[in-house]
Amino acid sequence: MATAAAAALCATVHALAAACMGRLLSRRLPTAAAATAGRQTRSMGSAQSFHINTPDNTVETYFDFTEENYKLVNKILSKYPANYKQSGIIPLLDLAQRQHGGWLPVAAMDKVASIVEAAPSRVYEVASFYTMFNRTKVGKYFIQLCGTTPCMICGSEDIKKTIENHLGIKNGETTEDGMFTLLEVECLGACANAPMIQMNDDYYECLTPKTTIELLDACKRGEPPTMGKWGSLPMNGQVSCEGPLGKTSLWTVPDPPKVDPDRFKDGSVDPASVKVHMSY
Image (cartoon, rainbow, N blue to C red; front, top):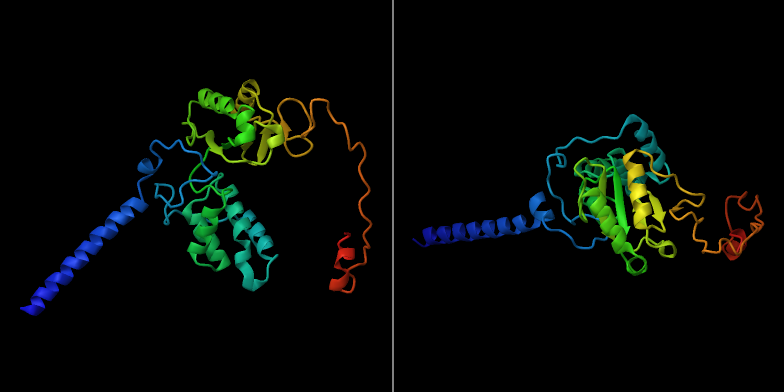
C-alpha cells in the first residue's frame, strides 16, 4: 500500500516538474511572431538573446562555407596555434555572415563550432554578445540609425521618421521586398557628423531628410554612394569631420617615426628596450 502511494506521489511530482519545464521553455522559446510583436524598443544593434526557430533557421538547416571561403577559413586559422583554434571564432563568424547575406543562421554557428573544435554553446555566446552579428534575417541594406544624444539633438528623430515614411517600415522591421531593415541603435562613434546611419559596413553622415531619401533611392537602384577618402561619406559635401570653414589645420603629413628595419633580426627583443623598438 505504502509502495503504491509512493509511486503515485513520484508520478505526480514528475508530472508537475514536466508542466513547469514546459511553461518555462514556452516563455524562453516563443514563436517568431510572439517575440517580435509590437517591438519598438531601442536596441543595442542585435536581435533577441535566444534562438527562435524559423523555416530557414533551424539546427537542421544546411550551411557550409564555399570552396573559395574555405581558403579564407584556412588563412584565418593559420594565424593561431593549432591548440587555439577558438581564437578564430569571431573572424569565422564574420565570414559566415557575409556569405549568408548579412545574417547568421544557427547552422552557420554550428559549422564554425565544428571547425574550431568547440562546443556550439561557445560560439553561440560569442554571436549573441557582439552586436555586429545578426542572428535573424536582415535586408540587403541593413540600416542602423544612431539615436544617442548627439545624433538625437542634431535630428536623428527626423531621419528616423523619414526612413520609416519613405520605406513604409517601423524600427525593427524589414521591407516586404527584403531590401531594407531599419534598427535604431546606440552610439556608433561618429558624433561629430551627427545625425548618421551605418548601412552594412559603411557610415553615411551629416544627414538631412532630403539627403536620406536620396541615399535610399540610390540604394533601390543598386547604386549606393561610394565611401569618401577617409572611409565614410558625409552627405553634405564636407570631407571627414572638417567644420564649415573646411580644413584649418594639419596641412602637411607629419614624418613617421624612424624605425630600425633590423630591430627584430635576432628574433627577440630585450624587454628593457621595448619602447625603443616600438618607436615610443
